[in-house]
Image: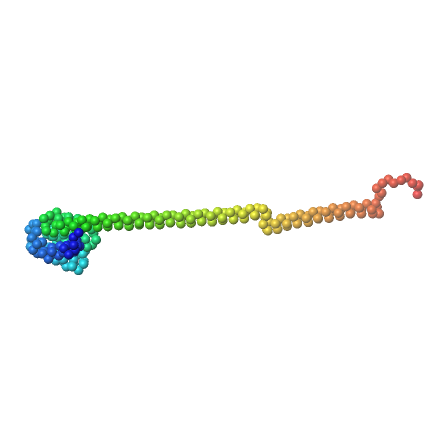
Length: 241
């Protein structure tokens, strides 16, 4: 096991390597010049490099990444690729950091910093796998949460539908009971009153008819018993008066 007094941690090495590249930019970085560019373009690249360096020093890694990327487009030096990898690492974009470290090594395989950069590649790949595993775990947890939420909503909807159906059945049952009770008790008060009046009128009619019949009978009796009444039988043969 290597002692920390002999070799600093990989994070310290990565920062140290960035510092070496930046501090030696006008000499070492420009010594990697792949092709000649116009003085104006080279000045622009130096300006973007200086902006990226300053942004990195103050912890604005997003701005530093943008400046180094613009500098690389103006003048594609391998050192800019390393600086871009450093920015991605600081931003937690480990897969992108590993990509740019590998690109740097592909262009500078014999550089003295190659062993350290290879360690950084391995570290970034491992951290990228861990990051992806955590992302998948969060997605699964979110999916489970959504499924549980959907199930709860479905259960609530089903319970509400069942409650509405029970209320409708109870209302129908009460209406049926009311109709049944009305059919058993006959017509309502108005119908009863009308029926009573009808039968009352019939009673007076029959009573009147009975009275008329009695008067007729009485008249017959009186007519047969008056002065001019004649015997209703031949009687017996008696002596002459």
